[in-house]
Image 1 (cartoon, one colour):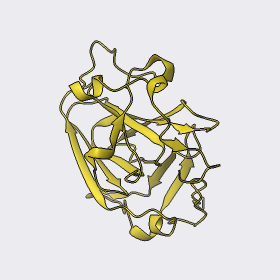
Image 2 (image 1 turned 180 degrees about the vertical axis):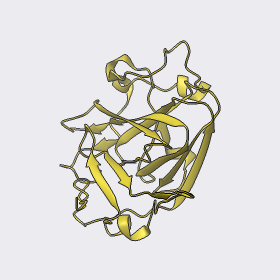
Image 3 (image 1 turned 90 degrees about the vertical axis):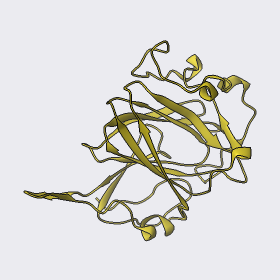
Image 4 (image 1 turned 30 degrees about the horizontal axis):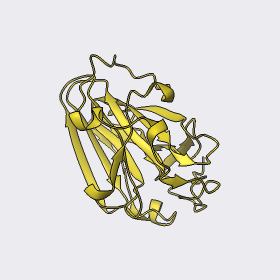
Length: 206
């Protein structure tokens, strides 16, 4: 497969050492880097700036989270303009259900979501464009998530929506009463109460 970034206005051919697969929402992409193993272990090239820079994505910050307990939920988060972020996520230990919710006003998939399992075992990454609220739930203890973003963290632009908003229809792998969630995330508004922050532009970055 010759992976071509099909969304967000990008038409550049990316690296040939990974596969690019559309999720249930075409703008959210599953990335599968090649991994070469032998009796010693494995080697994998997980990132190269030209793979994404040629497609208009320049990552400027790396983040690393550790969640000790199964059922830890982080999200659903996003940053608004002028500090909106694209995110590239992968798991180096454990596993998560990773979720991206389309919050682009006018999008044909507004309010819908893509849910993808990322794990150290399956070695998948997820590319979440700006215009999506993002969050995840841990499936294994001591799960570590690494992710790159295309703009720096800006508290004044930090926003969120409720992870358990029933209107989203997300089938989380944990009951709301059992989820481990920060006080901040519990206080996020419902999608219906969110003022428009992004505008759908026919697949371009909004």
